[in-house]
Amino acid sequence: MRFSGAIAAALLAAGVVGAAEIPQAERRSGYDFMKPDTKAMQDEDTANPGMLWVLDGEALWKRKAGGADKACADCHDDARTSMKGVAARYPAFDKTTGRPLDLEQRINSCRTNQQQATPLPFESRELLALTAFIARQSQGAPIETGADPQLAPFIAKGRELYMQRQGQLNLACANCHDDNWDKKLAGAAITQAHPTGYPLYRLEWQSLGSLQRRLRACISGIRAQAYDHGAPELVELELYLMSRARRMVMEAPGVRP
Amino acid sequence: MASALINVPAKAKRGDIIEIKTLMSHIMETGYRHTASGEIVPRNIITSFTCRFNGNEIFRTDLFPAISANPFITFFTTATESGKFEFEWIGDRGFSETASASISVE
Image (cartoon, rainbow over all chains, first blue to last red; front, side):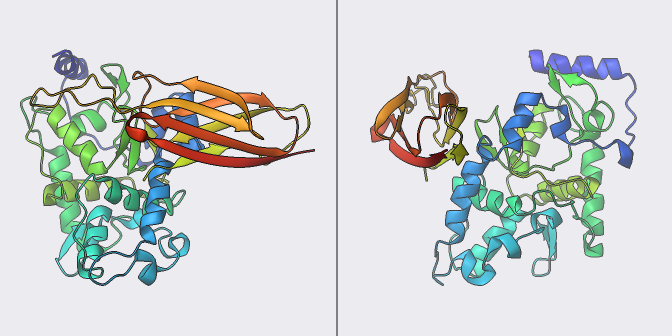
């Protein structure tokens, strides 16, 4: 109850909400809003709990799986070279389905089609570990998502959802993350919603989590019905957010409060 | 898939104060939470962490349910001689993990 009260208060303080997009020069990663101790946790590999998943992912990368008895490494070789900058281009357009796929879905499509293995469940330790390991190879690289012109209609749909008021609180993503990002909600920084560090370790979760988990939590927060993991709407929203964060630096695995 | 991350300086001068940092993968389930159907989720935590240097215990700590998942434990020690740090985590349900790191002291 207190939480929803705070949202209402933040809205009242904001007065009339008119979604104005954040100018390129004023974009800030969620990292910028953190306290020095949380920043230190992300910055040092041996203090960043996300690295535990990266280590697991490295082991999984080399493990043979499925009917094809192939490991990721059998086709993609050393991830340090083959996966460099890849996560910075996701979600990407998939020719087979004619739709954008996020990194988790891309890993599962590889598992199903190439390894002939069962897809890994969303938010499972294995899927998060592989995603974290691949995303880690793009750490420091600028986000390139959305360069493919075939993605344009899906980015537009994602943007539409981002601007769409929904739920019992009747809020759009933009009402907080474009219009009130410099304010606080229940003591926590609202931030600009740039997904620069996913999958990331949230201290609140006590675990690594995907961008879809974060989006679903936000959607529940405005008391709307959250989309299922892997729903096209969530992928389009991920795609819009990543393209909105273009040229910002990848931090995966990030740490957030 | 338990794993540890260890940060020990590879080199130090004799008499230097050095920081040892350890991070262990563990869910640290408190034993106080309930499932949707009301059953208690059984406690599953690390109960003890020990560090030995060249066989001698130099640091030990007990852990309790209030400690967050993936415990990050750091401490300081004085570099006296070259050797090997051995770390051991022991917990509920037979949890037992070890790791080690070497240091060369000049």
